[in-house]
Amino acid sequence: MGIARIRDGNITVIHSLGILLNRDRGVEEITLANFLQAARNVGVFRTKSIDGALISDRAMYYLGRPFDWSFNIFDDSRIYCTELLFVVLKTVAPEIKLSTTIVDHFNWEIIPLDSISNSDYFDEIFYIGLNEK
Image 1 (cartoon, rainbow, N blue to C red):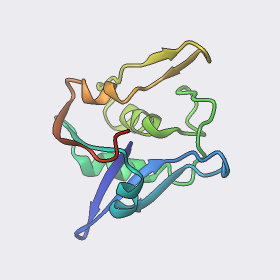
Image 2: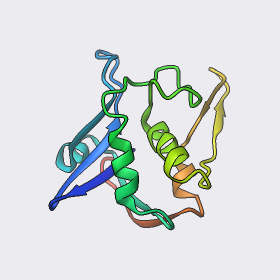
Image 3: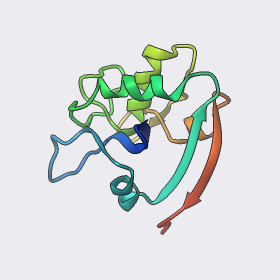
């Protein structure tokens, strides 16, 4: 999951990536082409009430934060993929609530992707499966 940022005709994606071999990787901004190379599916969702530039500008604040391997949504010193949108929305649109779910085995409260895709706060622009397995 990433947040698109459009500036001067260039599209980048701000996202948080965790790689087991490089545990310090985290929130970064990459080109859309690079993001799509790793994507298994692509969905574009837009908030109904908040300007996307406001969201992407706030996401830039979190660049460099390490990946959150403990999946703790209550501490934004480390951020996992869907948590990035969660922490951004807490600041720019606190009225938007993303649903959470509990991962029983670990007792983690996480933000699942369907909290965005099934939310009344977002419009689906399009969705396509690229590399579904």
